[in-house]
Length: 153
Image (cartoon, rainbow, N blue to C red; front, side):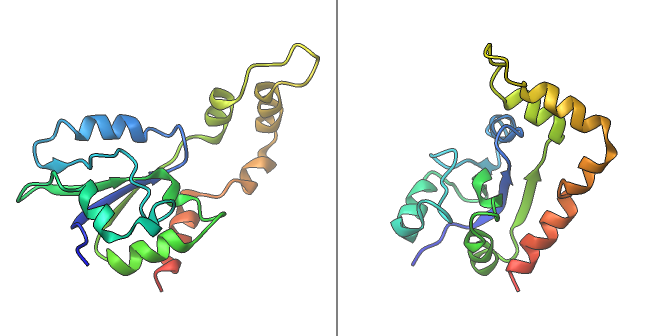
């Protein structure tokens, strides 16, 4: 089994800037970007095997720093296996966890208001943000990272 030497993983929710970070890092001479932007090896492509994963990183030269941009690894509400696998095979890798303000995220990723008189997600979030109680229900980045670290134990 050959596993690529991944130095860091970029994870997070959809629409949180992973594509921007990806495009910035492709310009760095020492950062090796895989041939597939989101390999998703530790989730959807686990059954493809380590040879497949190594092939995705076949373009890495000596002295380059390898990275894996798969935001879905952070979705532990569905499956904690990716975090466990990363902790097992890459215990020294860095994790870059991208988050976005929950209000701006929701209002910018929701469909436009329906013409049939339904309440728009934007107005719902405006009402919710007027109350401070909603914030206590939003998991903080610290609690999420604590959960990810716990999977490695």
